[in-house]
Image (tube, rainbow, N blue to C red; front, side, top):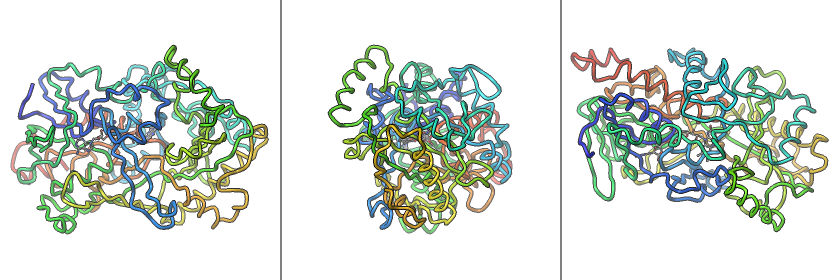
Amino acid sequence: MSKSAFDYIIVGAGSAGSVLANRLSKDPTTSVLLLEAGPEDKTPMIKIPGAFAYFMFSKKYNWLYDAEPVPDIRNGEPVFCPRGKTLGGSSAVNAMVYIRGHKSDYDRWQADGNEGWGYEQLLPYFKKSETNQRGANAYHGDKGPMYVSDTKNYYPLNERFLKASENVGFPLTDDFNGESYEGAGYYQFTIKDGERCGVARGYLNPVRDRQNLQVECEAFVNRILFNGKTASGVEYTQNGKTISVKATKEVLLCGGSFNSPQTLMLSGVGDKEELQSHGIGVVHDLPGVGKNLQEHVDACVLVKSKKKDGFSLTASGLMKTLPDTLQYIRSKTGNLANSITQAGAFLKSNPGIEVPDIQMHFVPILFDDCGRNIGLLRQHGYSLHVCVLRPESRGKVSLKSANPRDKIKIEFNFLSEKKDQKTLVDGIRVARKILENEAFDEHRGEEMHPGKDVQSDEGLLQACKDRLGLVYHPSGTCKMGNDPMAVVDARLCVHGLKSLRVVDASVMPTLVGGNTNAPVIAMAEKAADMILKKPQRVLAGNEEQELEAIK
Ligand SMILES: Cc1cc2nc3c(=O)[nH]c(=O)nc-3n(C[C@H](O)[C@H](O)[C@H](O)COP(=O)(O)OP(=O)(O)OC[C@H]3O[C@@H](n4cnc5c(N)ncnc54)[C@H](O)[C@@H]3O)c2cc1C
């Protein structure tokens, strides 16, 4: 089927876009076009949970963004910002950790005037989206598209991490998404039968044969088309051809926190002066587009191991790779059936704090820079990563030019707020305390980073900056709210425009305290319900009245 008009056009088949494509095309009388810049997710590597690092080098499946270099961060080396570029978006390349964040993260959105976005309102959508291996309860669902499973621990070091955390006085939790967010424990994962369960597998594949859903890959959306203040369609390029297609109800922008603001700006929606400086005609002056960028800034403690029971690129480590591969091929079990991180924690960087403000990812190998630091892997060791859960520092994304193919400029303004610096440094001290506990005695070798000599606050802060990383949770660049810098309202409709919503991580007004895939999926589930209950074009009357009505 090749049509020139659809009820809904969805830009981006990532965590949010795939959910919308599934839910909106459920009614066979509704036509939906899903446009994805990346290729089909055909490579078998996507299915293998242990193949995570493969995608960090892939031009084909990853946008491979870099943030603008900053002299005292990573010694001026740009910070890597991977993003998935295929069906499933970043859920096709992520580490599959299933975390929702803390109740108060959502209650804060609601308290800030975003009606309907409190935890109690979102919980039904978290449940709706999951089939938890442990079955249904007050917090979990058992009928949803995303399969959520327990890890099978193949590394003794994970147990050491949990024992050490307990020994130093932290609680253990068996469900970060249930009663007790706080503590150390094993994560759950979006993995089914030893294979990745990204949104393409969970939401898209089961509905690909619907006649009213058209999915186009390698279809790069250049801009949204407008008729006055109403989004009327999109222009995209595929196989060298530029195609315009109409939306009779809505355009739904789901390109993620870097690309959604880029597409808006290229379409004339953004800060008026910035658009004009690139020669872009202004459709709507919306200064908040691209601002308010937030990320989970990450630092780590790296320790050499006396034992050789983890993975490494040493002779003994590589010897294990062959049996691991054979085991995976035979039974979809073993190390390759798991994420690179299996255990972690949500802790308080200082005892007086009310809600845990740091997250830990324990990795039973020497792991830095998203697995791209191959040199590190030539030794046996383990890593404890610490991130600031609710950063106060804010960055921005902006256009480098009016050419849609030019990468967006990303400036995080890392650790610009003193509070973030303190949280990270205190977090590193907590990580050290855990790693220095007797539970690690049999394994513990030299602390490679920051290194035993680094003890002062200033020294630790610089060490964090020297190896600064991200947890790959950019958000906030099209924030939801009612203030002058807000881009969308609580219905995710772009302020001042009609028939256009943004649905992805960019609408989070503040970053949630945890990994962002499950939150984005739940948000998209809620968005689908809102769209189906009140699509924008059904409103009648003159434009002014309609805009008032959809506020
Ligand atoms: C390496 C990595 C590890 C991560 N690990 C975890 C984890 O373990 N757990 C967790 O919860 N979260 C994790 N995340 C984060 C999580 O995956 C993301 O927050 C989530 O997938 C974001 O969803 P989204 O819908 O906002 O964007 P995305 O899923 O990135 O989707 C955006 C889609 O839009 C497409 N697109 C963009 N621009 C255009 C255009 N102009 N035309 C057409 N298509 C376009 C993109 O190709 C992409 O498919 C990780 C992310 C990365 C990158």
